[in-house]
Image 1 (cartoon, rainbow over the protein chains, first blue to last red):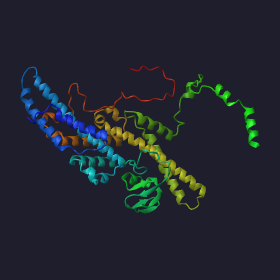
Image 2: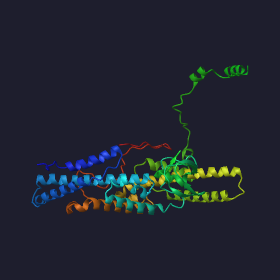
Image 3: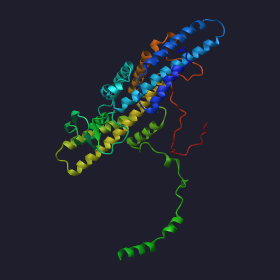
Image 4: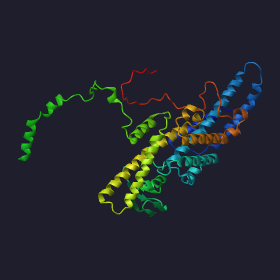
Length: 198
Length: 216
């Protein structure tokens, strides 16, 4: 009797995960087991519904209940996945489109399913094409949270990032040193965490 | 002492502070001059610089829940301007005969360019965010498509595609056939394609006297 459940109970658990993720503002691990259990439940429900649907005349009440359950489960599944892709998209724009930065971060990578990694890669390709329209004058990946007040920014190097090409030539950023550089050149490094603004 | 003389002079010249406070006009409701004609109130768009136009469109875009028509000419205009200005700046910086004064001006010009670039970026990305959000709605609704630029439309189609394939791979392909579609039309359940929410409240700033509007 341990596997008798209410209709839609698994789906509600999935939605609670999404809700928890929004409330704590983190991306939780892809709940593969719950998703699979839901899909199994869907298949079982479909098997039960098929013979009922073949009756002539007005549909049996059982059929209506089962169809409603099937639709609800499906919408919940789709909502969970869409919610996760939305969070991934926001994260992507948050790091300024530096895909390797997200994917090499083991912490985040372990929480994604392989399909989501593919999604990120395809989204990245699409954005690169879009970006090509503007790339000569302006980098649309740079920060839009604060308008620039100063041309230059004083930064401190937190992690080694090697030689970076800037307008005044290439600068070798070594850990612990401070530099005054043009904001446009190093914006992407600040976002990825290599430099810290002082 | 000098200070005492000055104080006496001030006190004698005007009313005292208490008198001034009592006679001060109410500054919260200035009467709008009634004699304005329509000509004076209209904002002629040819006098607005492209930057001011872009700022206006940017503010509109950020507060609107729907996608507004793309202002391609304004954008292209400004981007050209930025390009030519940055070329001039590069030339002047490399030129040894520019004076100290001009160098300061160059820094100011560059700062201004950075700020204009910020606005353009914010405008483009706000639109982009809305397009991503309503990608499926865009691909099924021709009216909205007239408001997008070509690059944005391409991206919307590609993104709707990517999303469809992702959902298909994760969920739909493992479900039995009758359930494996993304365009169900179930009664009493909101549609799977989310249209922009036109019922969200917005703030408006009236530029002219408008005839009275009935709100639901």
